[in-house]
Amino acid sequence: MSSIPHLIARVRPEFARSEQDKSCHFFPVPSGGPLPETLRAYCGFSIAPGQAEALEGPAGMPCLGCLMAAALSD
Ligand SMILES: [Zn+2]
Image: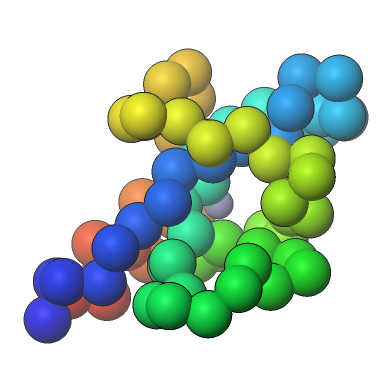
């Protein structure tokens, strides 16, 4: 199953503190319901929607943990 939609996002530059903050993380998109208070990336990194910047595609440095987890989730 690879039909789960992914959201690619990173922490907005003004909130980014660490290298992990600046990386692009992959998030499983909850189907239908409202956005949860905290988005949890495949790698375990969590981000508040208000501090997230959604991206059209991978930009900058992708999070390796998310890449691995997304690749293994099929
Ligand atoms: Zn990640």
